[in-house]
Length: 599
Image (cartoon, rainbow, N blue to C red; front, top):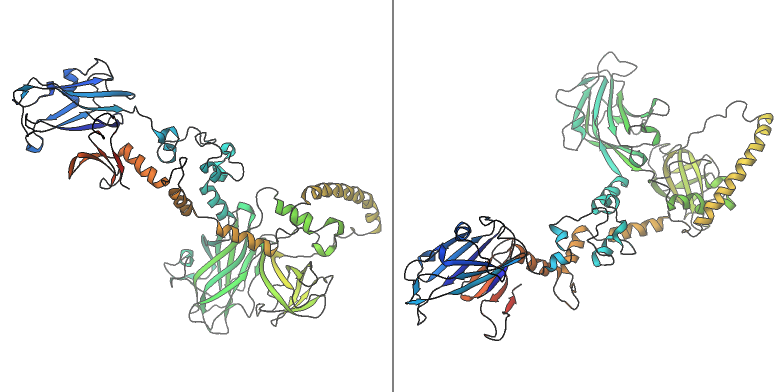
């Protein structure tokens, strides 16, 4: 008799047995075996399946594959002819008790024993089934993951306690989405509109999505409207998440016309409800080109409609010559996220620790918050005064960064200050709108920010003696309140790094982020883990292979040794996972069998 395994409810049990004469030779029964010769008992009792139940659930073949002395029996555990007979949590014994004789003898034999989900299952007991197949009981708290286990420490940062694990923010998918949300993004056009001009048949904004030689083609018309024979808009959306703002406009294309004519590029200014001209005579799409050329223009936070993230780009030409053609192969707006959800330590440190309120001067800020996303960094090569110096590699375009907020960091003196670019020439000479409190040396860096500085006249009457006198008392009250609140914030943030947003720290953090393992690497590491049980050397992958085979794999008799049973891989059905001897080892005195793991 042999125990052939623990089966799932509703599965099929396949049994083979042989018949031999008194000398050991294969032999057939006096007449073929029949279903009535099979008895199936439940647990250690006299409860047996009825003859009708056996007939309904069992399929008997007296000469399997026409082989004399070889018999097969298949038991369908899903059959419920005897209601409730086959159920989880029970053992079953299959007995051959024929009325036929074998070699003249009346015989009986216990063919095998099996169970239905009635053995200790380490996979289930240790909640490992929840990794792949069984849903957790509570997605929000995942009680199946025991605190301080390897998996718990992979899921949590410090304490190995998963009770506060939030799949909305802490899952790999959520982390991926958060990184994507704060990363620079590139946006294709979503619509076009031709105010003046004609469209080449079959072309529209969708032709500008990629550089592929498929153009959005338009031509001027006569007469001009509003001074333009060609006036074309493309609409983009940068979204509103994390207060995303446009940073740059990239164009690949050309204007096929005579060199004296060109196309200028504009961006809608939603603050002034007008269009800002981005190009000048040196950066316009001039008519001398006959093939693709790349153009880039800077955008700022005035070029986005904050309610829905809309950005509008306009192309205009004064030409009224219908033979001129504007070819747009690629047009894209890039955007950056300028704030994170909530008040972060970095934001507090920038407002308090970096700009020390105890020694605050007008050079530490522009008097109000502006966008501080760095878009370019340039090295100072020669320094003349606190208001003028020369930088390397500036764009060869006059006033390219005019009006941009800048920060100058003097390495030698370890000091920095903010100002804005009043003007710049095409030789790299920069003139500032406000003098720095120092003259930068040739090791200094100039950081060009995405924010633009716009200064308008002071409203009439605000600066009179009477007005100032009226507001002095109120300003003193406000100043005292602000000092108290700022000091309270400073007391809580003094332990923050002196400059968490410095280039060194940012680069270090980027290196750490790049060094984080990928999801594939984490999975590979888990698969290769050993020591799952105390002192164990099997890898996670090996344990899963064996347990999955036990749960879903087939048992087969070894082709070259009928005394050995093989457990096959559940997925491919060909890989041998383990082998076990059908006979006892040793032959007597033991209830165990030799089991050999083959992987």
